[in-house]
Length: 401
Image 1 (cartoon, rainbow, N blue to C red):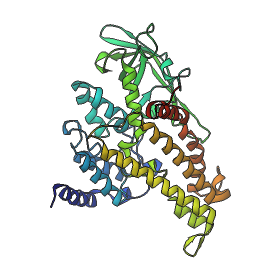
Image 2 (image 1 turned 60 degrees about the horizontal axis):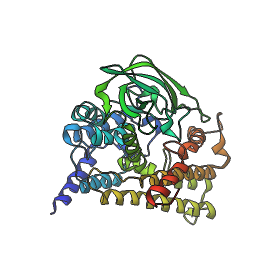
Image 3 (image 1 turned 90 degrees about the horizontal axis):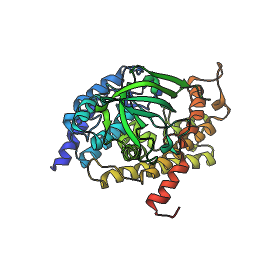
Image 4 (image 1 turned 180 degrees about the vertical axis):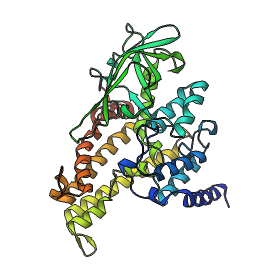
């Protein structure tokens, strides 16, 4: 038997034995684990699953073992993804640690930085947030003004970030700062890391129309940052920042379990097809409304094709690599799939999808209303659809400005 076949058998047996049954169900937002201890999952099984996968090295399976991974090859990684999908296993750990800053540190961090930060990311000990956008620097990110002054053995950071996802629950932040005000705007930026518990940091959650506050305003007032957590080179953070966004937009770090469901447009709660059958009814063992039925079939086909494209990309890459500008295609298409999913759920539930409060609506219906409102941001967060299309046009297709 080939070595990969043996690995598949061993992986299947381990997952069957170690994945709790409640972790083989659609992801519920309240049970999501992004790392850290400031926001806990409501399901204790989330941490049983997290710890078992961390011990195995499969929260970040392709990372080196000394950093909390399992040194899996590209083919072995695909086997783990496939076997997790076989039992509908959730990703044990999500968030910016494993999907964004972790892969970036593997590429740009020095040995001290990787040794200090990566094992804590892989174990789920630390939750991270992103300090990129500012009130005057959103899509034109390189216009950022948050500054870091050189004070000898540390930087002194002052400024403001906005749309800082999960800042109120995060332990650390990766942050873009201006370290050379006189340089051209892309060349005077540095990439630094620091603890969110440092004195001088103020976080103000932003309440959205959905009623939730996933984003925050974040203020820095004379925050001291050790130079040991300057990533790469002084004034050369723009390249690091762009590479991190490619990791984020690829979605390749979150293909397993809940990650693959999200990338294909699926969301937490009951599956779309089941909702439609329950709310619209069934005729000849099919969803009774032919228009909605066709729309759901098309959405599922698009989602499956998208997921397969991502998996093929993994198979075609060298181990540990991430595609470059083509990642914007994943971000653009995935955002549209997510929004389509919510629109179809609304159509399936009809007027019951528009409740805000009251006994006439179930908890799932009330959650759907809020999720639909929040989903409008999918084509904005992480880089707008327009930005992604510009990147594809210039960097992938080579079209003129």
